[in-house]
Length: 551
Image (cartoon, rainbow, N blue to C red):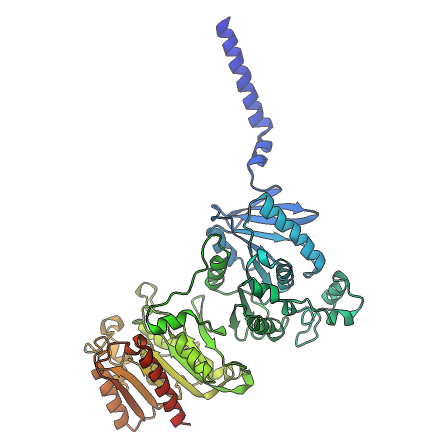
């Protein structure tokens, strides 16, 4: 009897457990699901579609959430150009979207967004500050919600964003507008008539003070030929006003690009921006810098904008542009293009920001160049570095009008390997990217190389890295008549790019009828002026005087 009773009790418990597993499986699964609603797959991640209030929302879940549950919130067009979202999901960010169609960032839309924000932060533990993504009309949603809730915003990324409904859909400027959507603006915002809408003072371009006060960083990517959302009336105006308020905004311009295609081929700048400012519990990362005077200066500087000058293998290359104060593109200023060193294998444009910024403060357009770096595994050679330098000058010259540059007043400088690339713009005929406009000259009007790689023979620098074709990229072996006026800075104690090469180059250049000055620093090591603030400033002054003497 005792054995039968124990057996019966075991059978009953087993039956109950089996019943729960079979009949109540869905209930148990729902209890463990992070979100209600329909579960599906999105680019390898779990997606949940449900409703908040009466509106459809969705959340895409990372495989492992980052600390503090950081998240990205799309204003509109979720799923278009998803590469940044996929990268951020892999970094532990959640992605969210609320569908409130045709509300165009109206006060009603802001109220609905408030409910979704409360749902995700209070019920699901999402971070209190969110990274907003405003693509096209999504800019109205993101900026209007952010202006009402600045303390809840980590950062804003705008992709050709609408920043003023008078521009789009109103069509009251350069754009063609949209009659249907303009009527929706009038209806959704509750305007009595068009005149009242045109007097509205809470468009994103008008309503930035709270964001600047809360130090919300912005990043905009835009096409300079945007015919739908003209950048001058939207991103350009917003950027100007935000900077006047002391706010930070980074700009990436895509010359010749219209409203489409959106985003970037290489989403890294977008992903890095959102990860930097949208992560929880991490200090906003400061730009890397060296402890030398030039390195310290570089950490405090940011370009006016970055401009895509070339696309190679799905990767954008940028000009980091510093514009003078009160600059207008019809000014046609001189251009100072500077190229970083690093043996062709390292370095970055930021290293030369102080040079570009200095000449921008002197009324020029200063530009620090990004170029491909030597990578044997990827098949990138020193020839490619030189090609990019020549491409950059061609781009600047052929886009002089939109850049506000005089195409006949381009000065090219660079340090070490960057000095080599600078010299290559004038010397290495035929080392060209076939995609370039080859009818446009890559030769600058003035050269100002700093301790450059000038001899790539075994007695100089880079011989093994370049290989058996070293002589094709050796400046001292390509001196010819008709070169631009040149001023070279070099130290006699340079053991990296030996001084003898610079001395020989200058002698050959003069013999062939060129104007070429060699500024000698006795005992100066490689990069000497980068480590002494006095020498750095003296060098800049000498370049200025040299340029002025040619005018």
